[in-house]
Image 1 (spheres, rainbow, N blue to C red):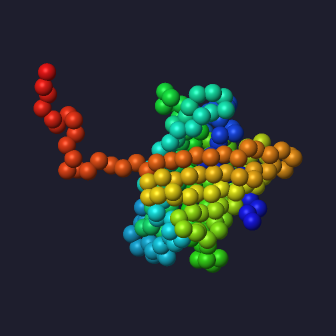
Image 2: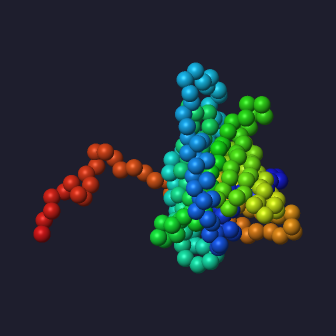
Image 3: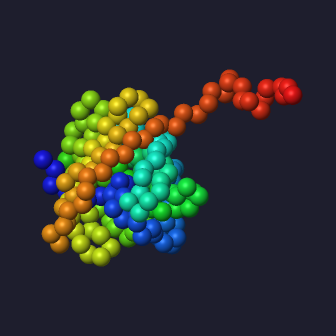
Length: 211
């Protein structure tokens, strides 16, 4: 059973009521951009990322109702970096006017020493966190998170990422327990993979106009 410290993306649902400052948002974006740098010439390529994580690569979108009212648009971008040795994860929540509410940047790695996957992440509320993965089963990944919040409170939580099909992913957060004696509610999020239109498909703007 996972014994982690709460984390990442959906973790923001409990924090979004007060929003987050622009400087923190830009900081998280900067971390994601830095993670996407390509390897330098002469770099020795290590073992590629294992455990089926490349199946998550792509852009995922969804909507979630906020505790403070209204809806947030969710975008999760997952892409390989450094020749596929790592996977970068960038999660953004925006309001209906596309203004930033919360962002999260992480790196998923294959640890050759422990023969397992790990994750390190930061978010725009000033939290930092780490996680270990249980070995995936049939397109699902369980992450055991440890987090340190910006106010110094620490905690643990379990996340589940599950592919319902190739274009639908369910993201769940369970058992969020904090060292100040409080707990947070479980969270559930469904995301759809963004599919780029076929280059052979004609757009409506290509069709002749008729009055």
